[in-house]
Image 1 (cartoon, one colour):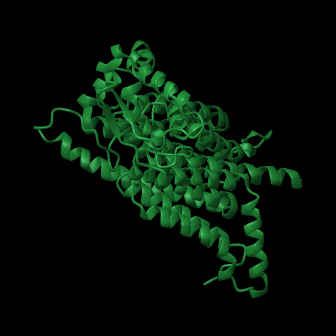
Image 2: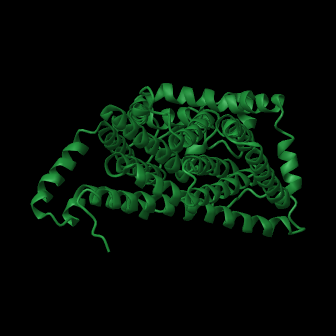
Image 3: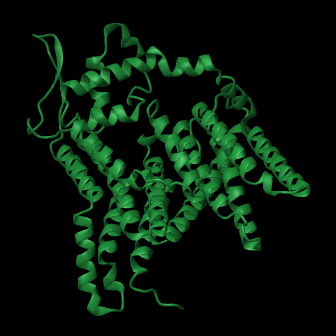
Length: 465
């Protein structure tokens, strides 16, 4: 067996750490286990100390010191550390109770232990933010400092494999519901996701990753292995698209249809001019078989509920769902909360504790299930983490995607398709809450950071020419 070289140890450690974070999160009931924090911290420590595992003893101290210096000067790592310190401060200063004052005839919250420090309402809710964001930052850091393009491809393939398991599990659970005559309403759960839009967002990302892997494996030299990889990833993409539809999320329906149309146009522009009559006929037959298989898979699952959800995809219904008062009153209340707590915010899940105190009397009847979140992730992050936390998150995002803004950096198939899925999900987050599920948050972050890895390598190759 070939021995792992000094340069390959960080890649192995980073790949194992990020893979463990993603697999654990997707398969462990929304990824809310505290143990994922220890996986994340272990991945970061091993990434720095990976030269200790190498055989060149004389280089260990120097390489470890170099890695520490790179981390200490990395703005993404520093801003991630600052955000985690903010969450720790909110967690340690949590504990506010709602008390009614009869003489004033109003409800008030008690003051936090430290009035001038970041705070949160409940300790367990604030701890959940640490469970969500620390693994996210660990995964992005490992991708920036430990993985190269080939390892990112392996990671993308592992993410697709993990999603295949979830899709099969979801299809199995759905058949138990569909063929039960006592069930008259569509299920809220698909696979390990308890909210349809989270399941739809997850499988939309997998569709983008799988199509990117299939496009980058396209047979440019006519090798049989290339055809095999393309076939495997096309099947994964088809399964992801079917799972996205079966999640019964209307927003997912719209985004997946738009994405598939775009992929179809790209295939037509890229490959049809190169194919002869027989090649075009074969390609058409393959597309027809895939479409029929996907339709049968989706329609055989929950046809009556699918038709009902698709019937809601009219322009008027979409406009009403986005601009309705049921949605706007939450955004208005969130802005008013943020204006009262602009710097540190109100802590993780603090929005739902203050919402009843910030809505108008005519909107009180709108308080029902689904009002724990603003249904706009950027606004909710601003409300709960303030200008400081939201600014740190935005800084991490901007520095991570900075290589993608260079001319010619995005002209790559393995980069183009996943990046499109990530951008679609980012736009979706402005009117919904996909990032309130850690699995979606981590896969989205890995998709962006992985695209940045490919962009940096492409720019480096262009500079050497």
